[in-house]
Image (tube, rainbow, N blue to C red):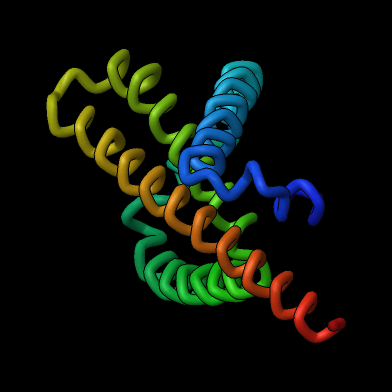
Length: 155
């Protein structure tokens, strides 16, 4: 994310700098994702309708088996992604939180006036945002530790 010199600079040791930079990145990502979702949403309607049609009772047996396999596969791929780069994984979770909150505030309010239908994506957004920030901050700590070990090995 940051260059090594920038990440290891003395001013970065101040406790509030890294969270502030992360917050600025989150706000920037939220604005980008909100803009993109707003531009892409009108074109996704036929695809969404096709997926809804797939979830008919006639296809439920095939979908249950395929869906279970797909969820296990995607979960494993996310595990590998997190192990490869926890910082990027955290940023991906933050993007998912932004999309979910945009969906809750823009789409759910218009289509589903029930309080439960509105609160579910809101709480999911809060959870993903928390997890994303935690993974991002933990990932930056791990990268800093790796950089310090490399410096010690060179000396």
